[in-house]
Length: 451
Image (tube, rainbow, N blue to C red; front, top):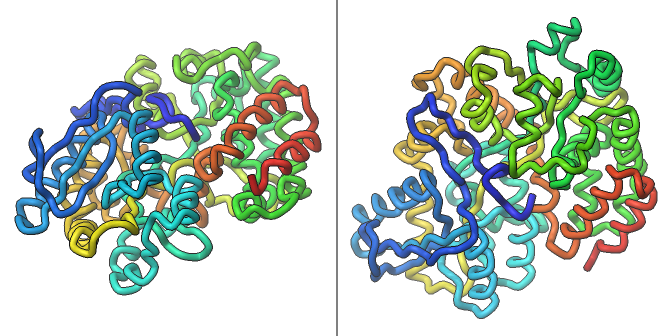
């Protein structure tokens, strides 16, 4: 989902953990911060360079990892430079295009990584993974899809996972005598029940468009399985016209026509957290949204979270669908690649940090303490040590969903290149406005494949 912002990428703001998680990917503006070999501000003389993002507490964890590596490896130090989100995206694109990118390139995988591969700017790491099997073994298997291009691995999954979740308000379900939906049919049956009580079945920040996309991501998967969108990603001609895709698009419009969302949902904006407020104030019964909204609902929703009124689950199956109900969508991780233009000395230093220090026990604990689930299996062992009793089951849910997912599909507008992602969001808006049909949506998007 691009562009990134606080609402979409701030995974948790877990006040109970004692460390507020502020904007995960900082807003545009400001100068890059360079931290030297020792991890403190100032110029460094490292063998390799690493560009990544600023924003507390993430930047502290990133800096600490590099500082610990540099302390242990004084002859092969790494210089890290931190950028605000929008500034980074522009800077790294320009630098890589000019053959002057950093040794270690932080990113989101998917379409951006694919463009680097096609331009021969990043190293094929497949053989390196084969020589270091523990790198794959320690990580969730589902994180590697967004690191893979044409069957080869070009990036290492790092940092944290953020799946999309179906939330519900337990008080409202008790009020109407309903149970959480176990199928798409259940969802459609719940819509008139809540509408009859003057409660919006679902909250949706429709003006933001990427929020609508989450519904399609799940429906495509639950109806047709991962290959439906996979064919789009692979550039298969006419992929958007797959019968399962057309059914998913039609089901989304059926939900809109049934008043499945709050009145005026098309003018609600996610950046203001108005969609979340509808859920925790009892104006909407359910919401499909990212795991990053848990923290803000806990902070802003009174006793909604702390009082045990928030329910959460993976999106249910569609009756007769081919998808696996354990699959999820969202952000399977962040990713780091190695520049194909880097010197052998810099590559050696980069690989050494990735194998010895990146996501070691110290870093994993820091991510969990900050209220996140990192992309490694060992994170599950640390959940019991979390102090807030509300947060333990939540973190366990995120861990289980991410680690056990048969597929953890990357958000479409991250997976696709901008030439396809931009018209995708535009057509999603029109689909939910009911101004185009499923077939028109498919025809419009088929024209973008291969561009």
